[in-house]
Length: 414
Image (cartoon, rainbow, N blue to C red; front, side):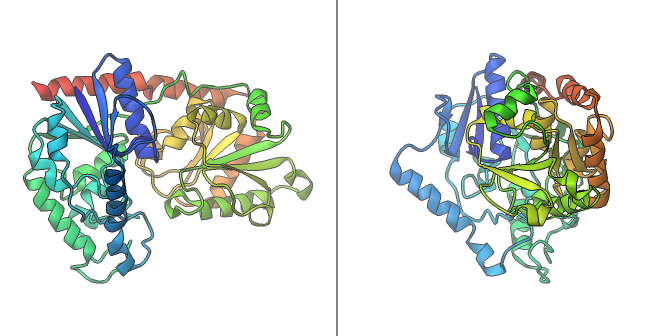
């Protein structure tokens, strides 16, 4: 039995990727289950605390885990101290798994101090940089994780022994006693970061690309998608979205604004009305005065069945993230046959191929990105759409990902 450990089952990109892998393994005939702190799905194979007391304690721990950030102010990127103790190893071992698969386990759910207490071989699918840094999920270009954290630029700290240095030292002790563990990364970029890190470079690491269900995420006729969503048929739609698209600095909402203003300035005012920006993940935000185009906010999409409609309604999906360990939004868009526009950075390099299935721009050249978006919107053929779908079918299917993990499980269980 494969037991996935994840703070959430569906909230956020990492949890979504974990859940989708769990379902792909089930479809491949594996006995796969999830052990989570907070569930949003009624899947019978997902185990989580049922008592109101335990649920309340989990919420308290989640808030407690973020308390140290109150002392240091707001970091530029997501930052999780991970100082709250956990006592989950006993419950995990009681499930008697053959393989334990860790995912995003932070937020007061599972402390790395418990790694030494787990009885089964461990596969840890890293979804960001947090497991090998002093607390940040994205280093923002800082390379101190390769030696020793401290003087954290994400926290604007000048102290060598700041909280990032203390977290880094504590994790070093935890990993020293970890037993049979193999790491996996969804992108070449993240694998390279892992192998350069001071904390995790001693563990074997595999590159296994994230997969997606191509029967669920597939092209839908654009007219049909727009009719269902109530979007105009005659406009060019530029799509942007994430879990927290407006507030998460890493998702590049400010870069999107700058890109759209430059795009709007390159188009005659009379033609600006032919373009529409559609944003999902947020219910409200800036409009035409900021972007130069009319803007529609779809809010948070809790029903995954809506996502293929949203992607299929668009002419291009813009992913202006500063860093992505993989780039789930780009993958979903390409699977639905919608070209993507992104910066040449991090895991997005694996997905978006310039002038083949979308466009790329040097980080963080908004002028170049706006020109690329304009180029996509000017095309009359469907070659980019076809290429977008074909790349996913060739390299990023859920079945392919599940098969790679099954081979890995067999290997480590020997």
